[in-house]
Image (cartoon, rainbow, N blue to C red; front, top):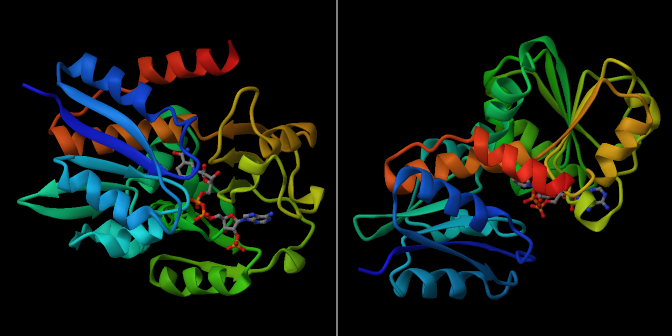
Length: 275
Ligand code: NDP
């Protein structure tokens, strides 16, 4: 029997670690799956996703820049995907498409379980208001941080998100030009800048020796943002490899009904990154 087919769809997507992670999860749990990548431009996203499912595909991970488009593509949304207005995970359920969002669960699990960060003790500065930011705001606010400030280049998008999540806790929005040059406890970079090797326009004084920095992006030898934060003497500079593995575990569980263990896969990936 042919293995069930899954894929990650994005643009760009060729360097994705998701095929490796899901192959490891499948081997660990004895599941028979095939996992590939689909590179689709924003114009080609809907057609490519529909073609994948029409051909018998069982599930998709959705990555940059398609998470908001994927929320429109599916037939039903889980409550957390509805809350986010963004989908990073699609499963076939009784012949229709179910959209979920595991980004926030992945990030919170990485921060709390893998890095022992007590979110409730911190004020959070969140950089970015795109598809990834949408998925992580509610799970962060559920951990009761002192405050969450969303900063975005397009300030209207940040304001829209602050309104969307205002019932969950203290959250406000601003542009980079309004950001005060004072230190923050936890700075989370959910912009796409590290992918381009650049930085958001940030005053260095937002970081001091107590600041924990987390870049959702990851890369060999860190990211532009993680290196910048380290250079400024932050307490810890973390990158998104753990989030990637943890959200992948959520995807695998939704698709296959079995929860894989993440620590050995994360160790292996980390070694590859530093090897
Ligand atoms: P989107 O394209 O949806 O959003 C991009 C965001 O980056 C927007 O807020 C955009 O601002 C901002 N941005 C882009 N360029 C700049 C710039 N030059 N200066 C300031 N802000 C900028 O992307 P996603 O939200 O899907 O992904 C964001 C990042 O998170 C990517 O690096 C992605 O790889 C990573 N990610 C990692 C995951 C993991 O598991 N580790 C999971 C999900 C995402 P504006 O609105 O003004 O255009």
